Image 1 (cartoon, rainbow, N blue to C red):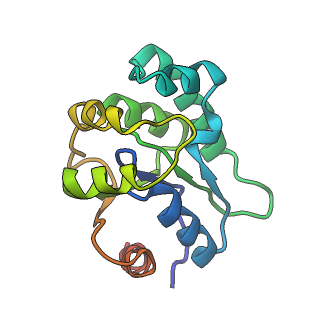
Image 2 (tube, helix red, strand yellow; image 1 turned 180 degrees about the horizontal axis):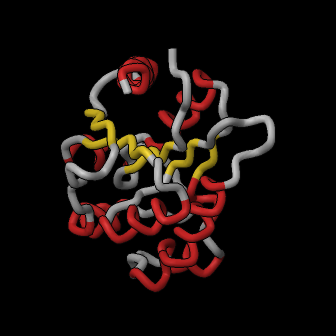
Image 3 (cartoon, helix red, strand yellow; image 1 turned 135 degrees about the vertical axis):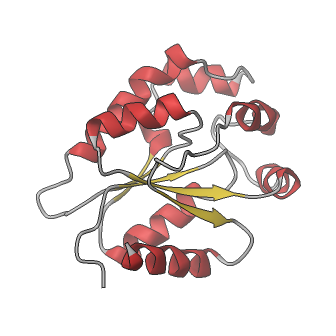
Length: 170
């Protein structure tokens, strides 16, 4: 049993399953789940929809909004789960500045697998052409960053089972 659930960010590149796994995890743990996409301002969404990757300046206010949401769970919730790409160490550091005990659930897999998922879905503003820029931007998590690595191959419910087992061990 998990006695104290830390705030969680389900992270990874577009198409890795952040929203699906995050929503299932929130349901399983009984805590609110939020999709980081909902925190993007309209200008960021328009930029991505045009096929232009976001830069650090574009991402900073978005990450600050996510950090604030992680730091202030609702009265009834003991924690929040938010899906957020969190591709760079500096982005994760910014999120941890709001919530020092933050744990990252890092979903990762082969580029071909992720590309296939992206091409098989309709997304409001994230074209498949941006996957390469996200993979190039992704920085590995450091040993000092609390995280749970998750290979995306497998059923989302099974992935959630594995994440919950890891959380129970911590």
